[in-house]
Image 1 (tube, rainbow, N blue to C red):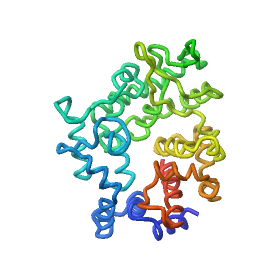
Image 2: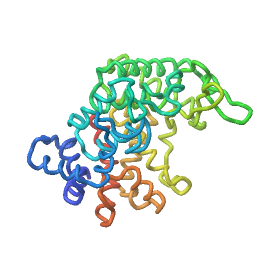
Image 3: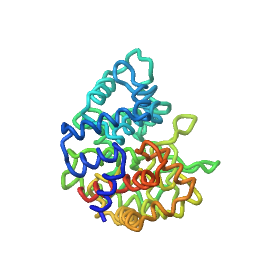
Image 4: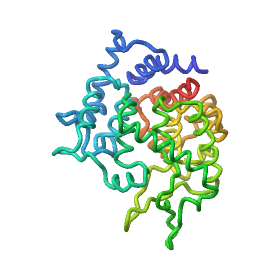
Length: 344
């Protein structure tokens, strides 16, 4: 299935799909004439050009730290990487320089709304977003990344002390559940950063991650993962992790057209974590994804609304005018997820 699917994607996929498969799966050199040509095509794509056009003279892309592609630096970087822009390209090196320049008079915000409050609670604020961008761009040794990695491991370790959801969160009179002050329960920002980095991976830390994930999934079973963070007189939405990944069914798209894309995004973020096969709920999720790909149900069972979300959020093809382009776009993301899981 794998070789047949990769051959199909290489034959019918656009420049981004071809480039990323050749670079990431087939390990071809970026300097080759073929890949250099594909890189030029990628940079000429209208969506790529639009995001790059939001670039400031110092290299920052967008108007603030966190937001959608072209508006937030984090999503702009992730989008360009997904399209096939190399993380060691001059474009990305200048992003790193702009990010590390510190607070100056800039025409953009180097923070995002609520970021400082979330920093206080270690729940994915400005510091965590910066660390995430730097990690994606290969800057693992940076002080931002190292500080957040220590926070991530501390939250995973401390979570083992909790027995129920009420040990680390409260519910107010309006029914809003929020984290207790000084509670240490891991979120998406902690897990995503661990997945993007490697220096933390001692035997002891790997075992900690496995134990904590199993423990947290048991605690959160049957509970909503939408827990707020209380910042003085108001609530902020932190980067929560969806602990029920293993229970996803594609039929959920009939109630929530975003269900599939958010599920896939979570699986992609964790695909390099290296502990999937040792965490039953995670293995269940990736096995189900493999089933959806092999049966092609991931294409055939989507409804119109879900396909629209997929195109808006996960698409790397230039258009969906051809049926082959739709098929390649929908299959490419899961294929990359399953490849990275197998490699790690």
